Length: 111
Length: 169
Image (cartoon, rainbow over all chains, first blue to last red; front, side, top):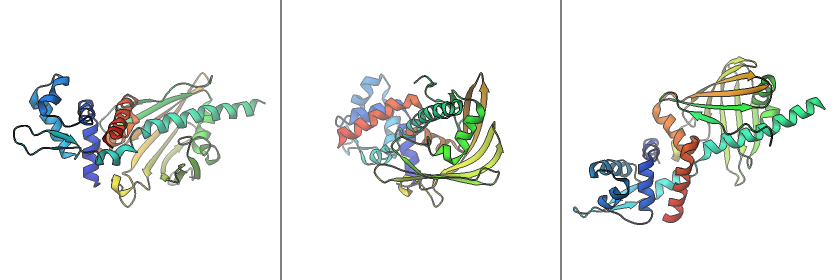
């Protein structure tokens, strides 16, 4: 994935509504109306989110002019999935190890 | 574990920064050593399942460092940078890059974009607070780092992405 495309995927995923839309689409195709329903959002607001997801390559939309159902495209998600959660886990894990290690060092000093 | 002082606190005071703060139950000199001496760093830096096979530190302004880790699947992760300011035991300023960031994730010839990190060590009552101010230079890069799950509030959402992936396969 090119740098620019990756940035688009990350910024698309940074929004909780868009992640919820993706979660809904994982269950199958849906129209804009169906997607708008659980969020109590206006259709234009949902359309805006869908455009962001479409530009990031995370969804595609059907050609049928009237319904244009949205479909999840999982490939870009797979590419970023191993980044997902890594940073927070990295620090929490490292710092917990450091707690233990500092304990050991201090016990060693006092004995 | 009596000495656990909780998860790191992560904030975003400006559009281009991430700040990570954490308290440790140890005096400042010891925490400073733990962060700056290779024989200490290799004992705690990084996830548990990873082995620190490279820990090179040349702790002086202009000196560089390189941390290499190998995961259980053999995947290697290399981080490195240059020290700009060293004031033991209270402050250090250094650059950081993910040196072998894969091209498909946006990595260039030198890996990821460079971050400038200001680390401060403050002691109060025998406990030391370490604060890392990470400056990413642009909102896009900062957000990409955040999107990697650094912000604890996003963790749950990202677990959901894993679920989405599982469902979509």
